[in-house]
Image (cartoon, rainbow, N blue to C red; front, side, top):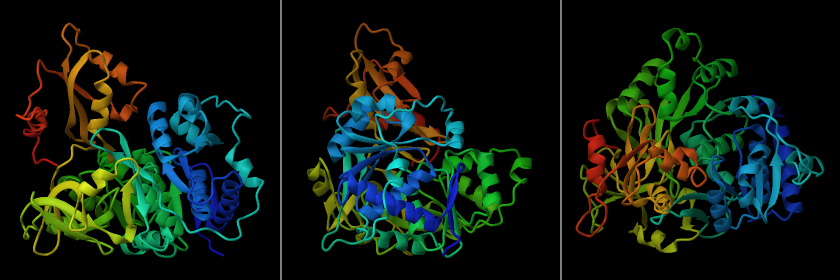
Length: 509
């Protein structure tokens, strides 16, 4: 029997006990019709029950559709409709705000624990028999005797129209157990081994922390600890208390910890740390160097995409020797740097990054198959970025071809925000883009050309967005323009709008 544990701030159980609960949960899913290949939406904050559900879904062969719990009812409905998710597992306190999206779906609730409630100021959770509780469904079942092969999660990214696109994994042959892929991630990329102790406070509904946490969950004799949210000093205290060896962080979290007073940073013993990985957002060289000086050469940076998976890894030594590199290729990934005509570029020449990674499997989009096909050249998919490879096989990412904003490690898609703002009666035209932010990497800017006769009001813009977009997508900067600059084709010339913010900041992302 393994002594490895799984824990959050509310409870801790043995890994074997979690798997047993998950086997009961798998039977519960099958009993309600949410078994093999059935999509089920999960709308939860970080807690141990979420990990139990992830493992239950894996054993039942169900397909998780992970949703951001900040999402509005409109956003949740759109994704559930597109994915076909007729089942939803959700933290009970989130239900009231999402009722319009939950209509016609079978809802299963999870009551958040005391520490989770304290972290988010959750009070007076209304109990109701209208929706069954996950724990009671699990308690009523025997463990599943013969598990299904694990299916990959279905994740959503943005299309050119602003409508979310579901990324569905394709096996391309006999069905494979996705746990095998996760074990490779655990051993080859995360360097997990028996008695490793993995910790994250990043939201598990996001692609990278979800995949890395799942990899830890399927790697033998690894303990997992998750925090409900990130608090800088609490994070350091947890590393010491739990003797954490492996960590997932994003640059925003690092920046906040570095800003702690020196006496606080020196208060905690961090000597147990062996490995810390970051993904998702630009990691400035100065910030990376400061963290290496503090924690030692334990840092790795990964570059990836929802559609492809983790493509590269850069060690601390790589970061110091080759500042700005995204690292070398991983797990059989191949990358082509192509010019606009599809010709492969030599080392040192900038072009569009196209990647292929068979380990994670092929994919298609749930509602936009044409864009998948249009983005492929020579069997490699465009990840929407520009970059170059050096003679030693290290990738450097120089710019984003797409307009995607990455703020605090979260992907934000301007087209989605623009589509909502264009519905406002006071907006004639709008362009949304990213501007630099020292803590979060980027912040959202909305450049608005107002309708004639409207009294310009930033508060009215934000108020219009309140029930339509999650708060983290709201622009932090709103600028009004008599007219937006346009190219000859009529397309808004975003580079000219961005320049006012980026030119005085330094290198572009």
